[in-house]
Length: 284
Image (tube, rainbow, N blue to C red):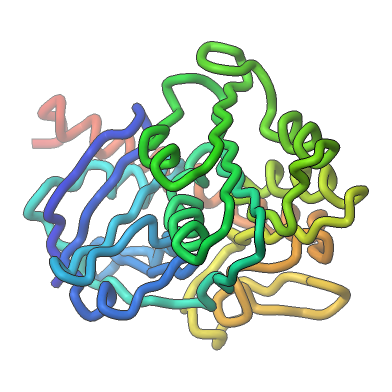
């Protein structure tokens, strides 16, 4: 069993757990992910590694409560345990000294972009970072990102904090300047990554994205996470999760993400009704 050693509410729907998983922490690298299960009957949920501590044996995960399982995860407390915590999975980020790099984190994508920015800076790169969210309440880790960046730009869609802009606006400005990066990482919701890739394509700067397709086993066996990249079928779990954003078939990815929307909605409604009944003493 994998015990939660720390919990932090980063935003109303965004939670951080530190989980004691020494075997995973020993090998984890930036860009990789884990698959967790709350209990033996639970759904397998892929979550990108947000940080790792080899000495304490802890893995940090950050997630948003968007469906039944993540809402259920949001009720877990320090001392609770996951039935399974499998990883590290996927290919790690290719860390080299590229020169000047740009990292862009949108929403919960700020969490996985942090260890990438840290590793890139440790490799000697100049790191320009952009983080953004719909509003101030959904922003987190500004200080952590500043600590691993040479330059940090913060945006909110509604202007409630820092610069009022989508992350693509400062991206285009920097690409048009004398500080054009040699390579870019952009991580966030699929639609954000799509438009980030579209924004960088005219400038010819390679843009790496971390895809969040539907995933079941995480080892390349089921094929649920298949995507089309460069006209070829790839499995996010073993070939990725990082790919060249200019080569991704975004239409296909977005369509596949919507396959189980109705089932997820019904499961979430049942969970919330059950949770409401328990808290109100119904059904006793």
